[in-house]
Length: 385
Image (cartoon, rainbow, N blue to C red; front, side, top):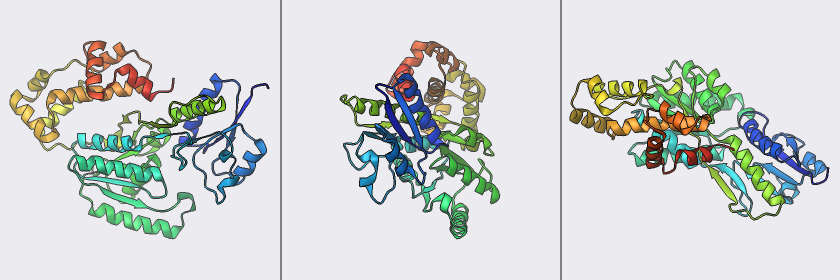
């Protein structure tokens, strides 16, 4: 076919890889000249396959090899995904891991938890980056983080390695102050950790509130209890990588060679369904806010519910959460609005009504005050169009 563009896509065909592929496929449907060739990232004949097919361009993450000169993507247009290539001239699309770590830290701190931990694998650069960002964000708020990083490849793990890791993990859990907020580097790690807690007869979320990253719907719902997770824009990674490669194949000027995409929000499920607040009045007020978030409630409604003066309620909120009741109402509404903007096609007016705002203009005003961007700008930023 004249003008055909042969593009090799080297990703795993499961988990996050399937979602990256969905983004690339969406771009390919919009550009019929694209012909995709899929190669499993762990294929034993990966390089032979690429050499035989002779693609015009390649989308892949960094590939392990003893002889990088022999890799076809070093001699053809190549866009790296989910990693930063050493060669700064290479275009890439990856995740803003600092933003992922900060989001997790803020989420747990807002729930009143004061003991924090991170679990991950040293074999993965994203795991190290998320651990550092999570710990740094907590340090800024005056909290410490107990980090547990092991080093092993899961699929080649020996029984001896597993026994040793489990022994260290048991000791780690025993020494941790409870209840503790545990952020895992990804959903699979969070799933394993929750299973391990159950085996050791620890309660989730009462003793360990566990948060993953990736929002793998199947894994999150198979988990018992259902698992909370940071939403990572894997589909958008694929789409933007395809856009960058298309620009390279056209030899068009690229405004940006590197794209770092922010997380799309956070889905809260039962594994983090705990709110640690020492003051009974504040706890009662927070329950009221969550239950009536879709209504246009005001601080006066809270006062009628908890039977204390405004001055006392504000002082208690400041002591427990570091913010006023009004700020907490607005914060929870914006969290809900972010989720609806990312997950639905509902209009700004419809979202405003579901988040307790009097109008779409009011939502837009508060949204911009808190996030620095309008609802429409946020929606475009987190979604593939």
